Image 1 (cartoon, rainbow, N blue to C red):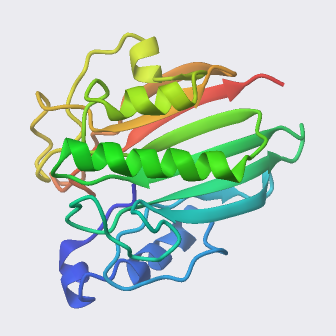
Image 2 (cartoon, rainbow, N blue to C red):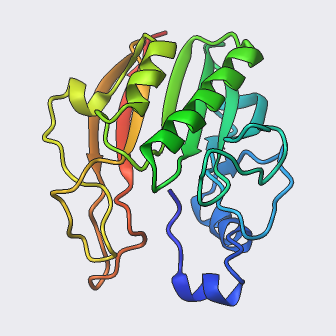
Length: 228
């Protein structure tokens, strides 16, 4: 997740797009995947970035987590805000392996809303019928891994694993109030990967500068290798 500056957001009327695009040159040679997207002000966008010398984007899209998933900013299921997911099919240039990468952001208030939203996402992904070798499913899920959403995802993609659980790491909170605390809360940000990967390490980046955190969530850092 991209760090954000609350004062800058206020000045921009809560439009995240300029700040996201300001951020892009700082992570070169990574490129944002947004060729499919018409950016809307006042919306929060999960994003994907890729190394264009290593991967080629075959296709990508946004899915709004509502009863009308192809209408931008559509709202359903008692969600407080429109939520969405981005997906991309990437080809690893050297090996020809195909990767499906998904990043999403679910409602922060109601479990039943999140369950409806993830059903929409899984249904739309199934309709795409993407032929892939490897999957990465990540996001700001706003609930712990044992609260229902992860079970639904893994039922749809039975070869997915949660590396945090696979490596038997202690459950800890990923959300805080810009103070690095609340570690006794739930791990509401997670990355799921297919069992075609060898998992090296997963952890939260809890670093800060002069006690200033870039986000109210700890970024999830995953190191893995895929099998040729």
